[in-house]
Image 1: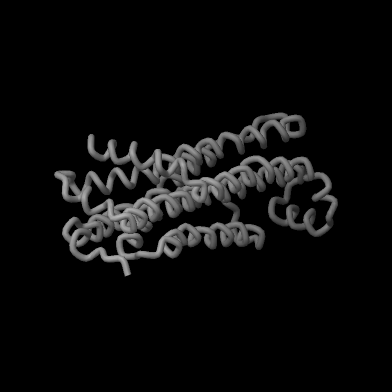
Image 2: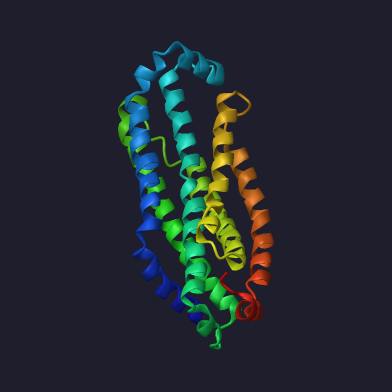
Length: 261
């Protein structure tokens, strides 16, 4: 564990200096945690004047207070959109941690030391998972503040945090981050192209769009049951991808077969 922490401290300093990793994450954070929630709530009355929008929400919720329905609906969708961070950030950090060391030839000397493969894998995993969890948590807090401050005068109560917020922020988000980290390590172990390896996080974008699209289509409305179902799905994937990552991230394989093309 001590060696894993040493690797984590060393690599996190290098990752913190990499603007190509943090710039897109910060843009998404500002957009979905601050700009969009404030825009939705401030412009809710104008939006509801559109007959098509008003009819949609009457169909979805069958409630008299369409403003409240719109704010609640928007808050749920923004929670889902913020899952882009725990998906995207590990897919940027983990490949950089592996493939850049391939290019600089610094991984082989590290493996020649007594460090265990499990410690090395843990250190590199923490380098992806910890920043992702910290930034995601900050985003969820900012989203709560933005929605509550902007809507309190109309709703008369604080909407977030609620149980759905807790499930997304502290269960679903870290589970997604772990799965994407393991998947990124697996692909990076077999790849020499950092761009292709960093594209893994994009795979989570399509399910996010699908979830929102199905809700707008009236197929279902996101609730605690569906969120827990998503948590269960990723929880099942965690040991599977961990086992594959440990098998792929093999010391002998790294020292003898990792060759840059």
